[in-house]
Image 1 (cartoon, rainbow, N blue to C red):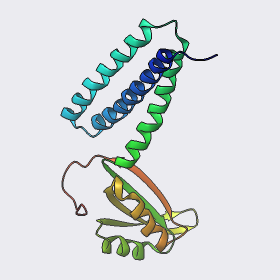
Image 2 (cartoon, rainbow, N blue to C red):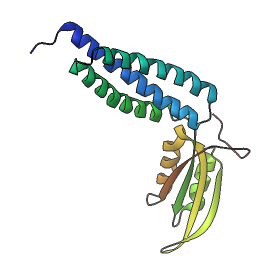
Image 3 (cartoon, rainbow, N blue to C red):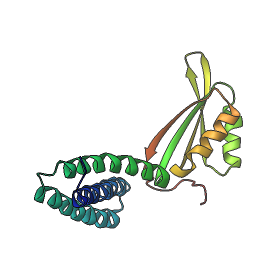
Length: 174
């Protein structure tokens, strides 16, 4: 069965609008979490506008199943695109906790040399004494921090938590 040109165009338009809509939704949520109010409101306005326009097109042509498929596929693709965009933007900060059996002081020195603020602790793990190294960094720097840690101790245990800095402390220069 051949698709009529306007049927295909309508479904593709809905797909594209839905991708943009869901991507904006992801970015808006990211801005809310980062407490960027003005940007959150602006993104939310356009996200809602596109949503209403897209839904109007679907409902005016509800008898066209391709519009519904375009809507659903656009939502799924928008989620994937939004997740990828959020990861690439890497807005915000993270707290990295690294546990090393033997190389904590060496790891802390390597991270400090790279320009990161580091705090060290001694702890006790399952097999005895461990070194705990903590470091707060911009999310876009996480791979670099993890790389430095892994170079120092291949067997280190690394966890990351998203944080929101409140005040003071040392932050690596941009």
